[in-house]
Amino acid sequence: MQESPTSDGTPVPVIAPERGSTPTDGPDHRESVLVQVTGRDHPGITSGLLSVLDAAGAEVEDIEQVVIRGRLSLGLVVTVPGGRDLLKELLLYGWESDVTIDFEVVEQASPGPKPSGHVVTVLGERLGPGDLGVVAETIAAAGGNIERIVRLSRYPVWSYELLVRGGEAESLRSVLLKACSKHPTFEVAIAREGLARRSQRLVVIDVDSTLVTEEVVDLVAYEAGVGDEVSELTERAMAGEMDFEESLVRRVGLLAGADAGLLDQIAEKVSLTPGARTFFRTLHRLGYTTAIVSGGFLQVVERLQERLDIGHAHANELEVVDGRLTGRIVGEVVDRAGKAELLRKIAEREGVPLEQVVAVGDGANDLDMLDAAGLGVAFNARPLVRAAADASVSVPYLDAILFLLGVSREEIEEADRLDG
Image 1 (cartoon, rainbow, N blue to C red):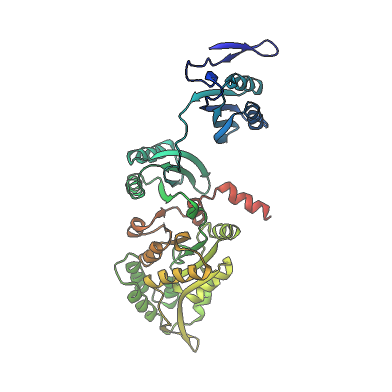
Image 2 (tube, rainbow, N blue to C red; image 1 turned 180 degrees about the vertical axis):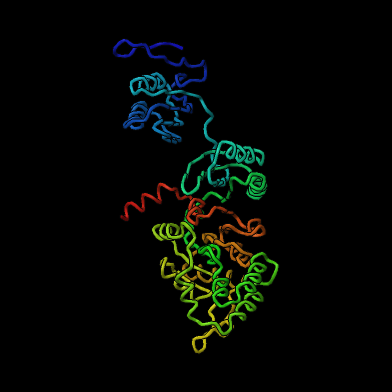
């Protein structure tokens, strides 16, 4: 290492070029150099650095910058022109700007696109180094390499987004789900990187135990005095132990003779899942179309649609005669297959390809709908649903699903602030 004096006589270290491999070999020789800048962040660092590079005729091949707690980490890959001692100029700039600048000669980028990547989202009530270490180790074992990590939130849950290159999607998903089963403190979701993920424009969501915390049919049944019988049938249907349509017909049959006014009472009493308002408010700000597709009751679902300004609502309509429930359903039953078909029809009506649809549900009757969507999310779901879905979220906050879409907590709060 040599020393070169600054204008005030202070010596500045200069990296001595290696023989036969430096930009000084001749005007036609060009070399790729990784420039790494670290230090306390302050305005003007990046612009000043780029001015030095521009004056020297260097070309920027790649650049990434992040600031964590006021500390800057900036990386640039530059093509250094022959005949210029650019390294000396950059070191001098670093000294004057109170930042550390390191260099490393790197291979020039191969022509053609980068290998396909996957986005792995990690969520948990609180993610520690042990949790993230398990995820990183599992990804490496599946042949993946983490290229970038971004924190999305620390409230209401912690979440990080990892860009992974290499490895095969199903293999990554399989090993990460196994890791989650052994370490229940965190969950992961995997999606292919690309425009389809960033342009998902329709969200279709189940109602009972998803958008709301209760099973609406059970609430109506308890008010009607047949709660225990109906609750047992609901549990069997959601666990996949009983055909949904058969279960629904039997449950609705038990409601025969009940006052239809119970539906209005339940619509007022039903509890939204925490984060539901934030979830839909943010989706609408982002330009998403939203829909409810429920095996529950239209008379209740339409009230929820109105409360949350949801675009589409479909559910089973209970027949009412002389102010009493007859125990029958009007029209076709919205069952497992019906939910998936409604999702497709809404997507077609809105002009949204299926790969840009997100579906959210918790029970066996949601499986076809989750499978039809580009991203199927199991929300606080039964084990068989979690195993089949593209992603699983088992925290009690509906807005945590936004993190799977790459929306950060800071972006949500900033949008809330701007809207007053």
